Image 1 (cartoon, rainbow, N blue to C red):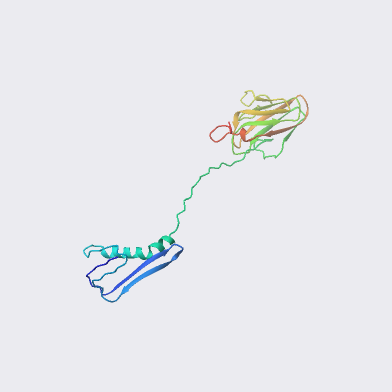
Image 2 (tube, rainbow, N blue to C red):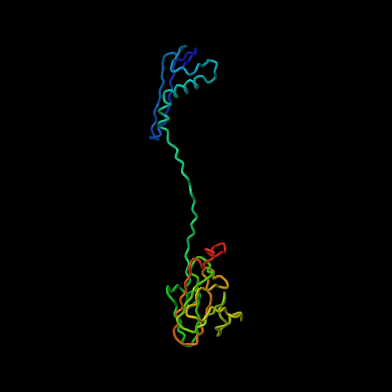
Length: 228
């Protein structure tokens, strides 16, 4: 590099901090100090620049060139590597589904079947949705033969009746076999809701009511059946 200048300096003191990527809090310094006047002269170091004293930023350009020659290789070696990572987003839906027979609309989950004591050959019960999804289908079984199961949507049976709902409409018939199978609710049973059921039999005795549901019996938040 070739530096040429006719301006006399009585004191020059430069401090250049060079960051070390391996130690964030430490720096290396280059100190150029001279207490003697600097007059016209020549500095030869891989002559890379011939500066004119009329250039406004002559000292800045010269200093930059000098730093590059001295520290260029070391800085490149110490530079931090850039690591590209691909980012993936996951949408996870969690919840539970549980349908159980209970004796009252807001009954606690019995964790088992509900046994009806049908000494009079009839009784009432409820199916309550304890989960986080509306239920479209359910599977039911019973243990007392020749017993007909019916239900009313969003209302109880009319007082004293096992076949008509409170609004005097006909209750919906589920069936009268021991294994009633997979049944579709005429109206989906909402979260926390319960439907009123009746059981009328030709025989007296105990009738254990069991129900079950699976993921494929649920309505998704957008109103469709899982895996439909």
